[in-house]
Image 1 (cartoon, rainbow, N blue to C red):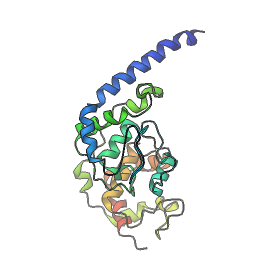
Image 2: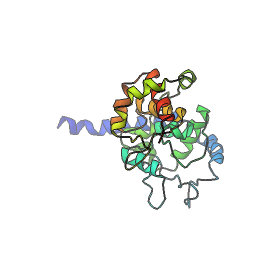
Image 3: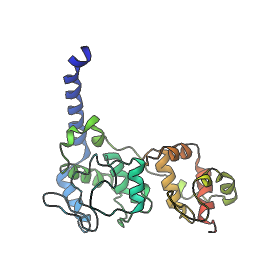
Image 4: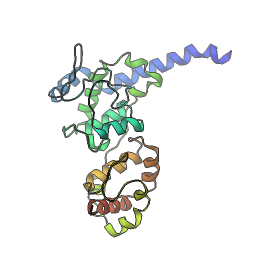
Length: 235
């Protein structure tokens, strides 16, 4: 009875929190100008249709690759199957560097480096999601966390022999010959892509629980070593 009596107040607090987070995301009017960079591939708003990329109506709270009728890449489909949901945090990471979340995404856009531009774009796109302030637990309106990778980490020269020693666990799933039946290939993967992906798992931006666990146990030098090993692995 006590829980039932408190429920309206709890829901009101969630609604207020969602509204506050939405206001903190950025300036939707400024975001409309940022969206001009996206218009070549995406539409949003009344009458929006799929173009080179899917339309972005209702993007908040939607699982990746879940928009019916659009032909997504296999990498995006895998991300959706792993549980990737488009929230302010994951969209912010994707807008900054699409490869950080989906390594072989077909989206050729190099990313928005300005945090303010990304925040404004998020605010604009939220206007085209259903009842954005009322999405459960206000998850899509949560402010993004810092996910920048130190350039010094990307510049580390990994030891491929050390990487070969570390790779035994990786090779229980990923095939050294580069085959990708059910599990994506990481053979000959560019080192920067490898490092970006591993840190996305460490920070739980990429949702696969096994990879989150594996990446979470690795330090900077170990990730660099694995990246060097797989980059030079002969097929």
